[in-house]
Image 1 (tube, protein in one colour):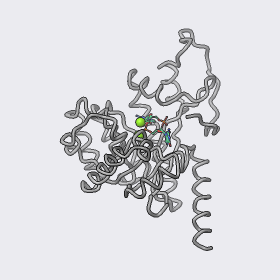
Image 2 (cartoon, protein in one colour):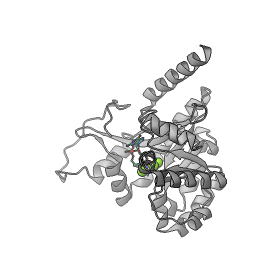
Image 3 (cartoon, helix red, strand yellow):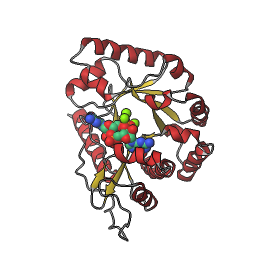
Length: 286
Ligand code: C2E
Ligand code: MG
Ligand code: MG
Ligand code: MG
């Protein structure tokens, strides 16, 4: 994914030359600095109700605009943050900015859920739940407006520890989403022990569906199962009109993907929402 948007703030030039800088990779030290200097930014990708076509929320995706290297992909800096114990600071930084934004939208009458990606490593920390609760208080945001996304594959390893904190998050009123569903190896038995509110079907699955009959069968079964468990269903990676139509026909609740919009910085997002409203309004009026 290549983003052409300019970041919210221009990345400042590094203050001092680094003596131990690795030639090929962007290191943990730089990431720690970027986090502490608030250089990591939340981008927002809309989620649309497939029946009504209205926007219901956003997924928050971290972006690292690097002074010399452009945007560093999350697939690089998230594992780096996990490895070097920076994921806690990173998550609180991104969630804090996103909560502030959601509270701002809320004050202007726009009620959107914000879905934040949650590394399973944070579920081992005893204080994490109270920390995010404090963030909510700070921004006067109801917990029901926040959804934590946890990937199916990350849970399979040590469900025991994660389970207690996931339950605590749910009790606080947060939504809980199974991310990248279909790519992991979790059993129905495991998944049913976690009080999830939402199931997000992995994009690899969404794409191949209209070409392959057997995948459509699995897709439909997953949606049926999720709906019978009263879970909201989200299809990620909706890239074409075909994808959109198929998922709508199959009764999936929400759609997210490039067909609708790429992840955007807050200003671009605000503008995008306005054009959507104008378009809908115009259609209704005509
Ligand atoms: P994810 O949570 O599954 O996020 C969806 C990814 O799919 C995002 O990639 C998004 O930009 C991309 N995407 C959205 N629509 C489409 C589409 O139509 N087609 C394709 N091909 N891709 C689409 P991104 O932003 O590069 O993030 C990659 C992963 O990094 C995320 O996967 C998530 O696991 C992780 N990540 C991103 N931000 C954070 C964060 O703040 N915290 C944590 N723990 N992980 C994060
Ligand atoms: Mg996600
Ligand atoms: Mg996903
Ligand atoms: Mg993913």
